[in-house]
Amino acid sequence: MKVSADVRALIERRKEGHSLEAPFYLSEEIFALDMEAIFRQHWIQVAIEPDVPEPGDYVTVELGSDSILIVRDDDMQVRAFHNVCRHRGARLCNEDKGTVGNIVCPYHSWTYNLNGDLMFAEHMGEKFDRCKHSLKSVHVENLAGLIFVCAAEKAPDFSAIRAAMEPYLLPHDLPNTKIAAQIDIIEKGNWKLTMENNRECYHCVANHPELTISLYEYGFGYQRSPANADGMDAFAETCIKRGKEWAEIGLPSAEIDQLLDTTGFRTQRLPLDRSGESQTLDAKVASKKLLGGFEQADLGGLSFWTQPNSWHHFMSDHIVTFSVIPLSAGETLVRTKWLVHKDAVEGVDYDVKNLTAVWNATNDQDRALVEFSQRGASSSAYEPGPYSPFTEGLVEKFTAWYVGRLADKIGA
Ligand code: FES
Ligand code: FE
Image (tube, rainbow, N blue to C red; front, side, top):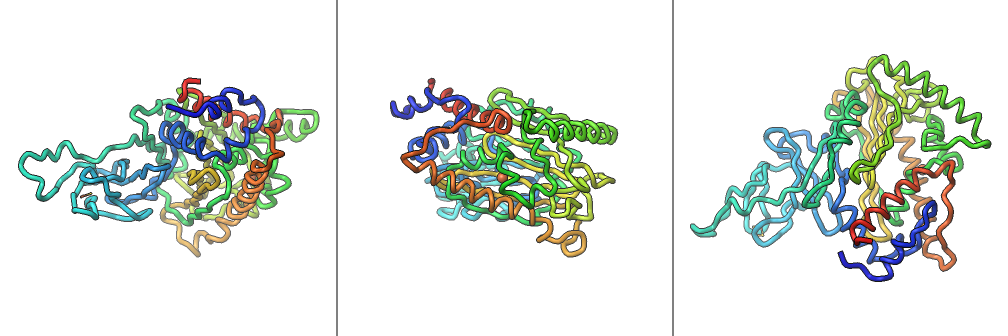
């Protein structure tokens, strides 16, 4: 891929352990490169099974100039296609979400079934071969109900992340949940600032009074230092004790932090503070109907972070999923979904305000932090600053992954 000498130089001189130079957050050229080298080449978490519970249910997601259509077929498989008609290219489904029998182009009514095969195309003559005009498919993986797509011709390996993560995720039975709430916010900041902010909890104590009721900051890649030794040691002991209890009921909790064939992810089941049940204002479950076959509420929080664009918290009673979609160099969509057991009844088993209170507040606080960072990066005085070796190791992992992928793409 062709990039300017300036961009190549920026990628080649990236200083390890430091935030990125300003053009990474501001430049349109780098934004276009991000969409091509990152969002078109890697596994992007864009949806969840409960978005498309029945055959014909679809969602659309915009990844740069590509629109991806995610649809459930008649055999209950989740499929992904480019949302582009094979006649003259009209966008097929023009809503964020909906239900169709077949996929019918609004322009000249070419009609595709849910497998993407072209079924009807009037006035095309006898020589026209319908079989050569199926929808273009997009790689899709359904990991325990989390839907990932990859629009590259050849997708990176997914088998390792699947093998590692299924034992952690499957007990929470995401496919049998429903979306109790969804909130889309648009942050006025570059997507990498959203991700960098997500990969550390250095800022949590000062900014997240609601989140830190239940969450221990130490679980976020902290390294032991003289300043935090007491807290870290106590936390490590709690992790071991709770980890043993969870292992007895078949729930793995050990940290996995891996980069396999460019697919980077991290997971750990972390104890929660106080009653230890859920990420709520009183750390107790927000939904009385527990997920899967769970019989106890204090299962801590299973966190799952993926490069480049998602993180998720799985608890005994609910799941919160976050998907980050860049909109422009300075604008980013953060899509949050709160999932409860599909049979849980609103007003009886859960209250949406209580369910969403912590992350609604936290998202808004994080939005402000990202926007402060974006404004700071626009200043002539901005220069890359050092990440803390004790609290920002995971930010460096994200940034190094990102720059590494750009370097691969341009052959730097
Ligand atoms: Fe879709 Fe013509 S562009 S039917
Ligand atoms: Fe935060």
